[in-house]
Length: 254
Length: 319
Picture 1 (cartoon, each protein chain N blue to C red):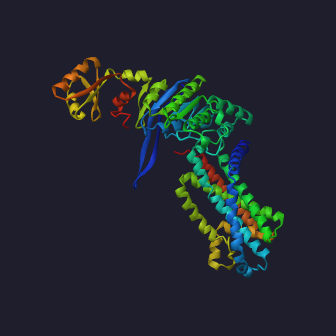
Picture 2: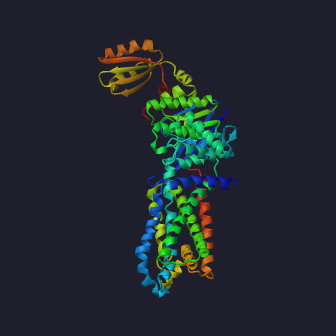
């Protein structure tokens, strides 16, 4: 009860501050739109081998990858805001109150999830204009996958931010983590074309499962096991990340 | 006693080049603070003031020792301690894009107050700290003094029994400082006990009922400012000389009436003597005899800096 109340308290504040800076929505949508406009047309001939005959097929393969990409990167860089809050003394001020430490994390992570889903909705609507077709029920499940990914990556970013306490350390760390994740997940191009060894390595990347699952949902292929496997893997990782980050919030620091 | 500590200690591991070493920041601090006091923790930067304060405010776990704060055991009931204390950090605690009112309401609610009570308390605090005019502007537009007042208002929004203030006036201009002293005295009249750290001698002297002097993680003296000053029996004579003060220091140090001597700068000396009135003509005679030109001579009662000097061998102004 206290956890729910405290989480709502932190979430409300974070959302209010977010809405005060409407620039983020433009920045958050601009890059993915560039991918839709400038990169997706390249893919159509490339994806012909994967069975993409029309624009609709191309976007059905490309848009889910783009959204997962957005969830991973959007989440991993949330730690910067937290370092600014640490520096301003806002975190310490919260720590002397009895407010729930888990709520300090969840309020922020939920804001990240909400802002990601808002971006995802805008991008989906734009992609519809390009010819994407997807069923609402499947789309909502895909958004659940995105929400879990954002929850996980932003929690990881917060935990690391609380450990390193400096932007200079956080930026290279997150970039180093993100690059292999990106290359080994088939986000931009499906790994169907990849040599066998690369596919075996990618099997160890949880985001590869999440991308496959999200693609299956956009394709309306509900029988595909990757959907449930992806949701399960990402869900478990999200819970572990949240527990780790909450522990970092609770830890007394110098 | 509203705060009582025994043997409180804390060390940090730090890295010095390749070798890791342990730095003892606080080495066995015993403190007693009575209810309703303004208690000052005086010491140079790095003496262990902030570390002690952060331990008492539950932000850091002590390595050893015990403490009770506002009737609760610090180590076993940190949650209970948190409800009863307020803490105001040195570096500020407001977010640039929020307004003072938003910050105060949020802080009240984080202490568990309902929205309506938190709003009422925020309005009262804004009024008491003369911030109502700026209450709905963003914190980034505030002056240093206004921002510090918001910090203190945030620390007392839940009406704590004890407030910890870490260097409450550092970086403020003289006018804002005087204003802040008045605010702190007002909190005491509202029934709060105030525990503050400072490295300003005049602040400890003018504002605090009782002080503890800390150096290298240990308490070196404790009492009311007057008691401490009286511990140093005798007077201080400040002598200004025309030539190099080191030469004059050598001459005077040999005299039996000089108990202790400190070179202030190239042309000034501080002498600690039993009786200033009889020492002054002696000083003049010694210097005159040696042909050292004297520019000035003054007689002082000991200050808190003299207390610090006799206890640690260093001046607080230098460290």
